[in-house]
Length: 248
Image (cartoon, rainbow, N blue to C red; front, side, top):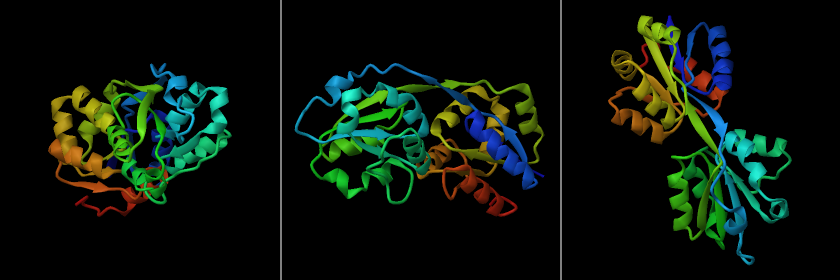
């Protein structure tokens, strides 16, 4: 029976695990990080100080919305254009009472957002709400389009040490599939997992949500890495179920 290693944060991993069990698969729930609020060093008054330019707030994930909205000053709220990456981020914005002005027409990556023609018109001041160590592609892409870009690092990932039970399940699995939704999780796994188990994971088939993660995993030595249909649990589940039985 196939064991599916799920490395998303705990809530999302648990939800996917329940669906995997229903499908007759064995989930190995191993979240590799949690989230914590972080006070950004960015001065929001200065970030959108120019009076005659467009003012853009870019939210890169539901966590960016969760931890970032509180840092926007009250008199700025109605002066901003709000851009999001991914439908989950859009849903979090709307449920929080904020409009969404810009979203990729398809896809869920920084590259997809940068394809919007509206971003190439009359660029101004943009703030990207994110975590440390990410979204360089988005920052550089907006700068190339003429935007003055700042990053507000409003949350951070807190690494989690895998437990003995999780390691035992990976070790015992005869048919293993891993699912990856972030490069951060890969870096933590490479650092924290015993060498033998890390080698086993790299040798097993993997599913990833973006070409960037696919390339990173291949650079680490994985040879069977396929893209999923999307980043949400429903798309992940379908990709897992629809993969060839031998994983290749």
